[in-house]
Image (cartoon, rainbow, N blue to C red):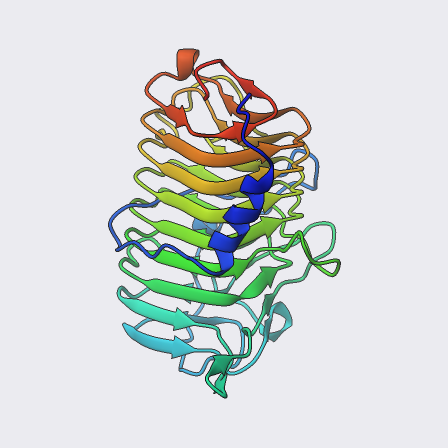
Length: 322
């Protein structure tokens, strides 16, 4: 066990809200939709839903759910968005299809300061459905800044494109008594590469906080995953958590991802997990505490080529985690 004090968690949260590290679109992570092991079964994954309806293109400022950003450019929100306003054919509130999109959900500037952000809220309930913000496969080099709460969806933010930056959001927020949990995951990177997801809090979701599924060369940093119903950050392919078995070739491994400056606390099972067959990942400066089973867990023998160092934790397995 690392002897450093629990003050580490405080410094990480400061990083989340005040010192966000904005690294160019060159490294990042991905995942897929799953079913919570302690919650209701997940809905069909977005990539499995056929888009047979006409696409409604988003126009800035975006005033309601149910549109797709089809052209590069800068987009804002006009107000809070809710699933009751309608969804896209892929079951999303906002789908991003074009490359080089900038999306900002902050409220208009008053007196030199933004007044928080407009929220994006799904159905909630025992089996939340839909996707809050969906970066589609082929939508690359986007910058998505969401000073908002993305909650009540099956997946809050689903990233399937490459080289995108998504930051400054809560999905949902473990620090809020009124948080509405997402179902499968707060953030899922499914097959995406070279994405940077940073400066966020993901808590009280029914299954995963962050899920990297078939996703390589991504970054998860300056962030918190707390009080989720299964695992804080899961690198693997199973909807239920570690299976101690390889998923290839059906699902490629999630390799060479970077998870750092992160806090994973009070999750029902584990804090941060790398499943068998996923390698070359770096986990550093991570604080794990009070998770139900294990704070930090690597299912690979002697961690394989994963590197765990400069981490703080109560429990970890195997001993190659430092």
